[in-house]
Image (cartoon, rainbow, N blue to C red):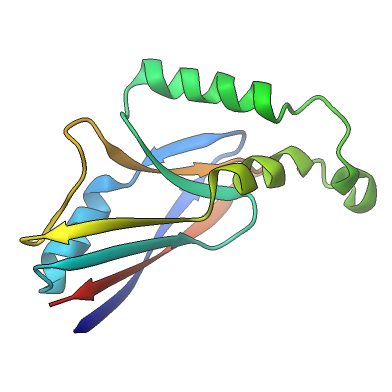
Length: 139
């Protein structure tokens, strides 16, 4: 069993950035030398998430609208009252979607569906540098 660890960094703007990171992750899997195993992705930070989705404008806009309905910006969050940074909604959104993904690897390829891409979602209300931890485990 081998373990390869890398970090991919992304700069975000603010207000629910959704970034397709599939090609960067696929490149890391290809160059890892691991043919069969698992890919673990983890986003460091409490106001960002990782998920998979069909990365096309209609679905992206649908997802943004759904997220706004589930954890809207315009309501009172206790986090904002305590810290005054106005990003309570971003913490809730990130917690609902989660910070990690696990994807099987077979023959040095991610076993994603035909229309499935890996996306980083940054919900914070200011630009950020986001680090995605990448671990590939296998043989």
